[in-house]
Length: 114
Image (cartoon, rainbow, N blue to C red; front, side):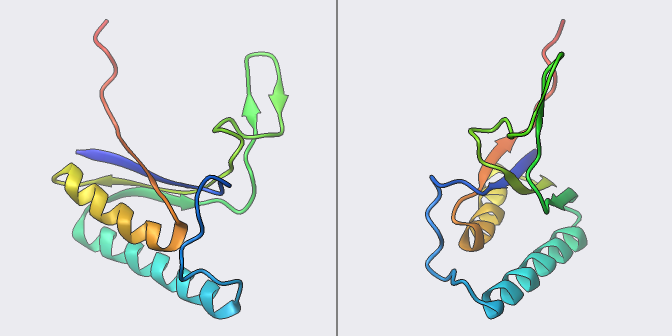
């Protein structure tokens, strides 16, 4: 089962209790993200991941807009994982949410039959 786990810089997401504006917090968060990436890669569960250093933009068939599409909140990172169950995806998301406040979990699917 594949799931996309996404983090947004959204005002609707409360900051985690452990988050503080400090160099130590940033260093600890980066160490955690590196560790979870390594752990997911070692377990064979990580399909892809990325973090983003700047906001994206939105494109329609005729225009380019500077703001992102998703409720105006920039996507700041994602993980695509291949896990044995939804419960495992939730377990990973909870670890991430401890640093991010909240993580969106979406199961990827097959396109509809035509």
